[in-house]
Amino acid sequence: MKILVTGGAGYIGSHTVVELQNTGHNVVVIDNLSNSKEIALQRVSQITNKPIDFYNIDIRDFNALDKLLDKYSFDCCIHFAGLKAVGESVQKPLDYYDNNVGGTVTLLRALNKHNCKNIIFSSSACVYGNPKIIPITEECPKGLCTNPYGQTKHIIEEIMKDLQKCDSDWNIVLLRYFNPIGAHKSGTIGEDPNGIPNNLMPFITQVAVGKRPELNVFGDDYDTHDGTGVRDYIHVVDLARGHVSALKAIENKCGLEIFNLGTGNGYSVLDVVHTFEKVNNLKIPYVIKPRRAGDVPTCYSNADKAKKVLGWSAQFNLEDMCRDSWNWQKNNPNGYDE
Ligand code: NAD
Ligand code: WQD
Image (cartoon, rainbow, N blue to C red; front, side, top):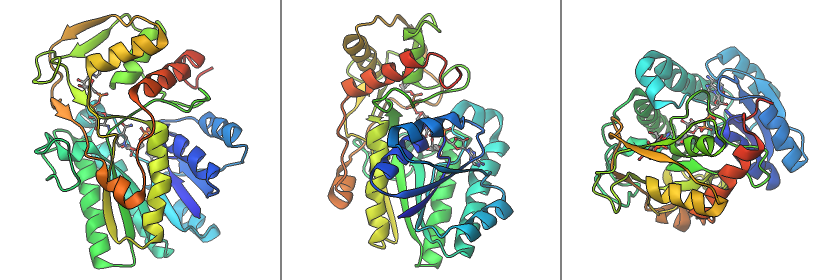
């Protein structure tokens, strides 16, 4: 298929472009490089040995999208572009609504105009809020998102549902990602956060590489097996392959479908720390700190629906994720900055 990938220079987008190209899809990437670097796409090209058509376009720029869609005829759009930092979204809520919600509406308008009515959207497990059911199925009611970032995902999901309800020519897949970590096995592409990492794994790898003295573990008094928060970590390559599988639903004219992309396993913060130490033969010093505001104790998926409908399930385990995260970080101590 001919696929338009928005946000394709980012962490999940770049890994997905690898899997798309490796399975014979034809990809055009747009990205405004607000949270990524073009070199990531050069690295993707080196992995797949295929060139990438890249355009520096902001999804809020209707005219630029219109021009691009005049030039190419796409079978599907995979929409990653968006801002994703929970803390920043609390500081700058309007930027998040403008970029994520406004940008998505503009993108949908442009696709609609050019009769490309197939889209796969990067949603998030955060739409479940403090989940009512564990493991979380797609039917689990959506919860109160405690931050503007999470709200943008919830609102975009609702906009897309309305769009599909009003025009059944649209096929829309909402993918709710759990906690992507890891990196491509080459160690040449990976997660490259700006400043102090908010998420657990990039913080651990920065401690391992000597950039930070110790990990802060946010809370050890949750009702979990060791008191620390439990999450469903998923290897980014598995996640990327989930998008290739989701194209099948689009081809089968699915209407609107929602899938969790997770492994179905929950691991605590200390499980991750100890697995990272074991597989990489390293010590990660840590200190216990108070709970982080807005954190839920436990969040992991029931991943059965994606297996049943798409034939997709995660192949990599936590050891693979810890090994590949470290392989990326140790080969690129400063991320994409050389
Ligand atoms: P990322 O920041 O690495 O990638 C997002 C990309 O979108 C970046 O390259 C950025 O430059 C680009 N972008 C942002 N705004 C844009 C705009 N207006 N126009 C064009 N490009 C724009 O993030 P990621 O981790 O790869 O996440 C990809 C998507 O998945 C995001 O929508 C994110 O919200 C969602 N998601 C991520 C996670 C996670 O933990 N990483 C979990 C659930 C959902
Ligand atoms: C995981 C666990 C922390 C950092 C966030 C977003 C969510 C999604 C993924 C996009 C928790 C603990 C973390 C640290 C720690 N993104 N932790 N020390 O919070 O599950 O989800 O990223 O959609 O929307 O909210 O992921 O990696 O931040 O935290 O102890 O320095 O690690 O408390 O238990 P989270 P995370």
